[in-house]
Image 1: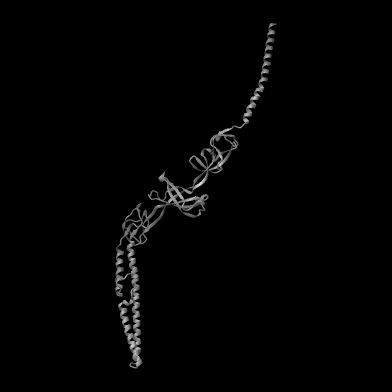
Image 2 (image 1 turned 30 degrees about the horizontal axis):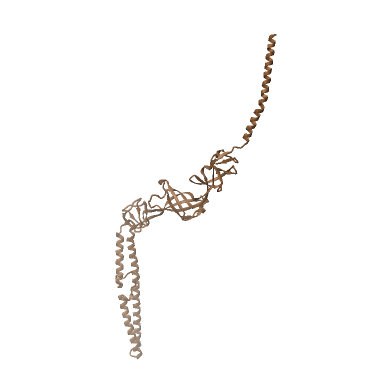
Length: 412
């Protein structure tokens, strides 16, 4: 009997406990629902991002075009022999420097001097035959009447002329026959012909004198040609012969290159070709002289663009007073197209680069607006913006990784 009562009591206790748990669950359910609603409301409210900002400013920048090119000699000449003969002197060697007019080689002069003496002797002989003064200079005229043969012919002509005049008077008076008069006329005509022939012979000899003078000048020039002088100032690029070699006319002796100034030849992209002008400055550097900058000036511009590369070839003149630069060096250069041009600048830290694209966040009415931009040159901590930003617009400079299109922001 007691056992039955005990079982009933335990069952009653379990029932009461179950009822209490059920009541407790009913009270906690509204509280859980309220918490979920609060969290959903919080998620729906956008996060306000705290950012620092800066205004896009306008600054005048130097405009340049980055190009590469090669240095070349301003002039290059091959020096050849102007007279044949043995090379008796060679005063320079490979790599040496010479100045314009410097004697760099001498060809044996013995043959040339003998030819001068021969030409002088022939000229003196002809002048003596004509009776020309030995001190008569080229270009001064010689009177043919001073020649002895001409003077003799002139005297004979004068005599026959007087004889003719006498015969004419006598024939008029009937003192001499007509045949005597005709004979006087014939003698006078013959004298005139001999006089003219003497003058023609002198003129022919004068022509020979001019020819011999020209031959003498050529012989003297041959002596001058045996002395080889540098036509330009420069360096010996290559030596073709040695002292003692026999040279024909035109035989190469050496080649010279003028290396001050040098020429820098570079190709300008088609997009920048319109900005190129003569006289513009070009700054260049070479690997062999790291840390040094050289300056050139555009002096020649190609007439057209290359059909293969679509580039415009320009040549700049680069001073090389210390001979530190060498022809053939590869040069990186900046062509200055404008010394002062307006540019929109923003801080470099405002730019985000993702997958090759550069973007910034412009702040408008408390919200972030994403813009894709095209960056230009850097100037200290600022970067030029070629496209995408206007002057005076406000850009975010911090916490950009938390921003997206339309994010609410607070500015500092």
